[in-house]
Amino acid sequence: MLDTIRSYETPEGVALSLRLAGPVVRSCAWAIDMLIRAGLYLAIAIPFSFLGGLGFGLSLVLFFLIEWFYPVLFEMRQGATPGKKAMGLEVIQDNGTPVSWSASLIRNLLRAADFLPFLYAAGLVSMLLNRNFQRLGDLAAGTLVVYRSRVVERPALPDVPPVHPPMQFVSEEKRSLLEFAERAPQLTQARRIELAEILTDLTNQRGEAAVHELLAYAGWLAQGQGR
Image 1: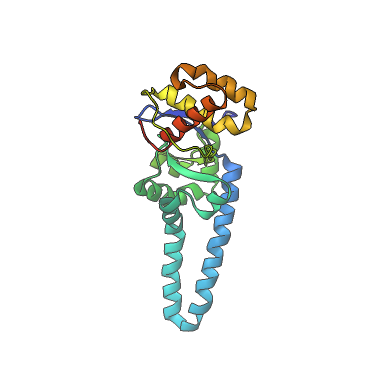
Image 2: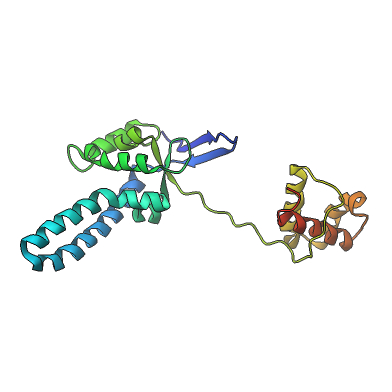
């Protein structure tokens, strides 16, 4: 129960590590969404109250749509309601893929079962008894609520005109060359030269000229060439 990291392998062979969201953070997300929905209800109820019975009926229809389709709409657009997004969460399928509309619809329609007998008691018990913190709706829809992965921005490469390398690189060599280019600005001049001169047989250069040549190769690879 203490280990909230789950590992999955996609059909393409990519390993994913997912950090599951527990009941506390999910409750905070729910509270935020509840406040937003309450604001929407007030924004609808006040002007419609001047329309008498017709306004009351229209209000009930709009309340129904908001209550049941507010989470589905946001989960399909961005994988999370505003409350979940504020808490850094998102809903996904239990195989690591984005949540489908049918799964989102099922998990949200079953909130009625999770709510029983009061205040989502059934859902809370389900999450506490399940190693993946799935409430009843999640179990039926095959979904998980996880922390969003932070997007790691890759550093910009040095501004060096790209040059076609004199040979084809394998994937590992391409990755090493790009990593060298990304780290180059943080390395000392002596260390940059030391690393670059390992490939003197390739570049036929030494010193800063070898560094410049490798950065040019990396720039060519970064443009999507040679892949």
